[in-house]
Each structure stands twice: as C-alpha cells, then as structure tokens.
Length: 267
Image (tube, rainbow, N blue to C red):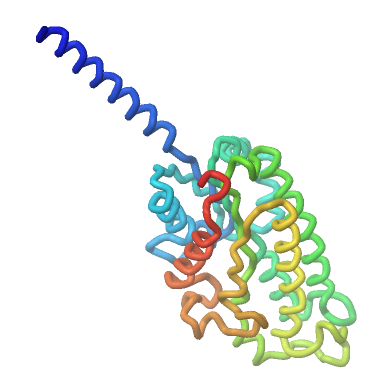
C-alpha cells in the first residue's frame, strides 16, 4: 500500500515538474528592437524606451522576455532598410520574435535641417533637400514595413512603432534662415514653420501606413509637441541637455505610450 502511494506521489511530482517546465517554455517571448539612438537609449544611463517597454511587457503579461536590441546610433531610414534586406542577424531575430518594435526618421530629418540652415539644401527656396528627404523617407518606410511583414505577421506578433518628435521648437522659432519671399507659401516663415511642414508630412505618412497595415503606432509627436506641433518638449523636461535625445523623463513617456497600445494579438 505504501509503495503504491509513493509511486503515485512520485508520478504526480513528475507530471508537475513536466507541466511547470512546459508552461515556462511557452511563456518565453523574444523581443527585437530596431532603430537609431532612441532605440539604443543613447544619453540615458537607465536605458531608453526599449528596456522600459520590455519591463512593461513582463509586468503586464506575466511572461519572460528576451531582448535583442539591434538599434544603432546615427541610423537613418536607408540604414535600417539596408539592415533588414542584407543583415542575416536582423532577419533571423525578427523571424523568431514575438515582439518587434522600431523607430526611425529623426536622423533623416536632422540631416536635411542642417543642410537648410547652412543654405546648402538646394533649389531657389533652399528646400530641395527637405523634399527629397521626405520622398526618400516615405519609400524607405514603406519598404521597412514590407520587410518586417515578410518575416512576422500582425496576427501573431506584437509589432509597434512610433512617429517623430521635434526637439528644435524653441531654437527654430527664433531663427529665420532663408528669405520668406523666396519660399513657397505652404512652407514659408521661420525655421520652425519650414521644418514643421516637412515633419508633418513624415508623421502623416507614418500614421496612414501603420493604420493600413494594422500596426499600432505611438504618437510621440503629440505628447512631445502638442496637437499643433508647436509645444517645446525641452520646457516639458522631455529632452536631454544635448537638445536632441529624450531625457529619462522623455524615454519613460515613450515607453508609457507604447504600453498604452496594449499587447494584441498575444494578449
């Protein structure tokens, strides 16, 4: 009798161990993050929005998340697209992921802004580089989405991205680099008004394409710059002392916005 009891108890123990191990294996998620210095968390000792979002996923879903942060400082939309098309590490990481996030575009914007301020943007209105940048960004952005969706689906993966904030509001409102009389009506005025015309095109494209592909997008621009795009995120405490990257408060806010998007389709 005692032997039978012991055998049953031992059998139940083995079943319990097996079930526990099996359940634990099912609760492991892989998270691949891509992007520029916002993804790497540049300037933030506590880490950027990516590790904070990872922690939120673990807290909110009760899963264990393995993070593969493939962000790269200084990366542009062309650089990210090139990695997606040619880097097997990036491709394989995405293919095996339950969570995929990316951010891109602020370096594209910054490079064009620098050319504009140096009066080397081209065209009679000194805005050719902005127009070319926006067209190139849109094309790259579409291809980036296509490359990600080749390897994962929105039906079985948490795929998230974000739009582009403007950290130069105060500085650009105080500067008028080029003669207004030579600028198109729609993009005429101080440097803020010129830049806003083009950043709004970029963010509008992000909104349309993510919605069309069922990819929730964090509206960072709205929180950082307000509904009219004219609020200074530096005054709000969202920008680091370098005048470009988010502060810890800013990175935390971005992670909070990502968290607010939920975890469909996995939860």
